[in-house]
Each structure stands twice: as structure tokens, then as C-alpha cells.
Length: 431
Ligand code: GLY
Image 1 (cartoon, rainbow, N blue to C red):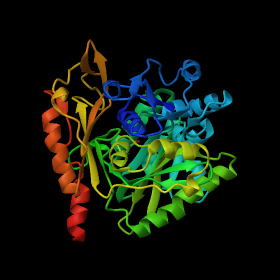
Image 2: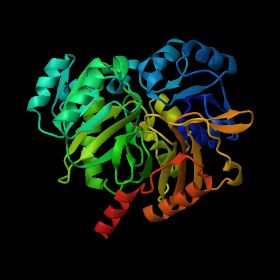
Image 3: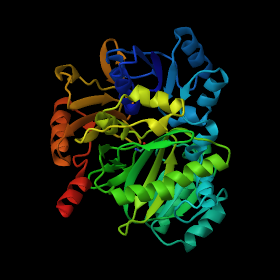
């Protein structure tokens, strides 16, 4: 079989790498891919962008590709799955209506409120003055969110009135996130620990993926500005069996039922970004209509089942009989970013040392913002690599990942030194 993966990040490298391991897959194409997918056996990059739907479907027909897996949110929100399906092509991901759960935070807040899904109290504004009046009466911190897609940067937690007014002004008046900031949500801040709960859905059934947590803040100690994610690990010790069941009952099932009631059967990965309070209460912070990045990298390192068969069974609505299997080891991924990430990443350095790292069973260097130029690997995006390792414990996986990080680091690299620290302190508290 042949499969096409859409996207060029670390998530898509992991998707392509895992699909290529399947005995039923002969060839994986990635559009457009990165230097990591370029170097991967059985994988070929295609120079077509994720939003060029017509070129993509022409390519799929010409190459007789059996099915397509969509990585990022932008093509999903823009309707890539609807476009492929209108041409009778198998495409794994939600329809544009399903992707609205991520495409519009105003829509998803309304959806959660209508379907009784736990989420923080919030108000929606298009008018700056009305929003400013609301901020005068708010209790701090508050969370300000741009409505539309903003590459993971559209959410700001503000601790005082002055920074709240500034953030609001930047979004609504200065259009920091363009059209995505035409509406804002001002939301109560909820204390707790974040958890990523990702499920694969076939329109009727779902299977939870292995649990994971990511570190969204740029700096050690979970400080600094929000990013797309500076590292992640799986499993998440926070997720007990009881909490797992509660999340399925209170969030996943009502979400899928609510979508079906709204006439939107959901097929694809569904990511619920959750806040778990110290008392174990659950609140949905956001939905994503795709697999997480960088969560995909450690999660797929632990997947023992055939990933291509899993996607095919989801496409054919057969997840109710699929038995998913996970490696019991811990996987931990550290993101290596270009200096200046997330606001102003310095691009153009070359990663020189990657050829010295032989392939290994217990680690993997996933590429994100890299491309091949004149035979060299050149940095082309803020998040550059995700160095991921398996270990017997979080400490073990962390030590292995950081040993490898030191080997591949370049002069102006930026990375956090403490990925997994919460999992390590949770383990020692529970010991
Ligand atoms: N790691 C957060 C995300 O994928 O949006």
C-alpha cells in the first residue's frame, strides 16, 4: 500500500516513520516533509504544500495512493478531508466542521457549554471597549485567547490588569494574530496541572492513545511565554485509571455524542487539552482536531501496534475491534529550537552533527523545522528537532534523551533542561 502524510513538522516525521514500519506499507509520501522525512527509509518528500488541495489529490490519483493522513490543523480547518472525500479518496482526519473545535475557540466554548462539557467560565468580545470594561471587573490571573488559529501562540495568561489590557489591545486593535483575533475569549484561570488526552475516532468508536503531557512554556520551571511545546513524555503519571475513566465519561464521550447530535460524526485524532485540579476536577482548556506536537513523538515511540492498520481501521469504522498495544517503557522527547523561538527564531544555521548518530531502537531524532539545501540540513523553522528516548523510568528516558541532545546541539540552539520534571516529582511523591 501507499500512504501520503500531509505536513512538515515533528509530528509528521513521527507519523511517516511509524507508517513506514508497517508491513502493509510499501511507500510513504510526505507533502512537503522536512530533512528528517527526506532521510527516512521508504519515505519520499513531495514538494506540494498542505493547502494545495487540487495538486495533492492529482498526485494521489496519479500515484494510486491508498490513503492520506493529515498532520496539521490548517488544512483540516480549510476542509482538506471534505475535498478528498468529494473525489472519493480516503483521507484520515475530521471534516472542516469537526475541525472547527480547534478552528474557532468561540465555537468550541459554545459547543462545550451546550453539551455540558466541563470548561472555565468565559466571555466573548469583538469590541475593545466592552472587553476593557470586563477586564476592570475581572479577578486575576485571566486567560485571553484569540478565536482563530494562531500557531499555538494565541493564548496568553495575564497576571494583572495592565498586562491584560496590553494583550487585549495587541489582539483586538493591533491585530497581532490577524483575522484570528477578530474575536477574543476572556476566560477564568484554573489552577492545576495540564494533561493531553488524545483519542483516535472512527465516526462512532474511539480508542484513547497512550497518555502524555507536554511542556508549553518556553523556559525551565514552566516559565516564560507559551510555545507550541518544548517537550513531552508518555505515559503521564498524573493519569490514574480513575481519572482516565472520568475523562472518557465527562469529556470524550459527551464531545463525540455532542458532535454526532450536531450532525458532525468525528473521524480522526481528537486532542483534549485538560486542566486537572488538585482535587481531580477536569476542565477542558481547548480541543485540537489533530495529534499533538510534540506529544506524537513520544506516544508513537511507545506504539507496538501497526499504525497503518490502526488508521485504516479508523477510516473503515472498525475501531471497536482493534486491540491497541503499548510498550511499557517511558518515552520522553526534548525539543531543540532555534534561538529566539517562539517570537523571532534565528534560522539558517546548519545542524552538522546528525550523521554521527547511528539509528537506534531506543531513541529517535525527529525533525521539525529542517530542510535539505545543497545536501546539508538547514534550519527552516522555530522548533528544529525533537530528540526522543525510551527508558525504564522518566529519569532514565530523560537522562538518555539529554545525553543525545548534547551530541546534536549546535551553537545557537535553545532547549529546556527539565523536560519531565513534574513526572519525576510526581513519581517520588507517590513512592
Ligand atoms: N502540544 C500542543 C499541541 O499540539 O497543540
